[in-house]
Length: 113
Length: 114
Image 1 (cartoon, rainbow over the protein chains, first blue to last red):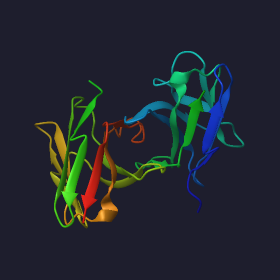
Image 2 (image 1 turned 135 degrees about the vertical axis):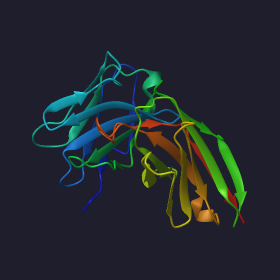
Image 3 (image 1 turned 90 degrees about the horizontal axis):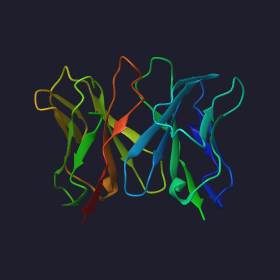
């Protein structure tokens, strides 16, 4: 059973470009979470999704950031018009329905130049 | 009220020693307290977790101590080994919502020396 898969592992974008981060949850997991980790800081919750539904987006910046988890395919975190402050590691986690443990992927390290 | 405060920021322990990391929370609605271990370039991995109905939980060399009245919990790593060198995060969540919506501490970088 493969773990949570994130791609790309590293992403470099110029200011103003769009970044798309992908996350495939573990098999059988229907809940997906996105977290952001700034250098030397802990992880901050961004958004919680189930298939085709955003359940909690209380940690998402109001502008430029969006997330989806379609019926088919991976969850996508999309950042439009990236700025230097978006440079961070973005982690996806998944859990089964009713589960307590969150399983994390290896993260996507976004660098905005 | 949503914060989880973690200390120390970094810790150096000799091989065989005890590593102790402390966390404090403010939100009394939190009822699930996991610890995560993260190696460089990797995602966090669950190490051990506790619920507030017990004061201590032990798994191998790792022990969580929980003080509900003080709103504090700590991780003890007994017989610390060089392979334990990593960053450790405490976290908290509410089981009634979703346990995986975690509020993390800022992390402790542990180095175990020979």
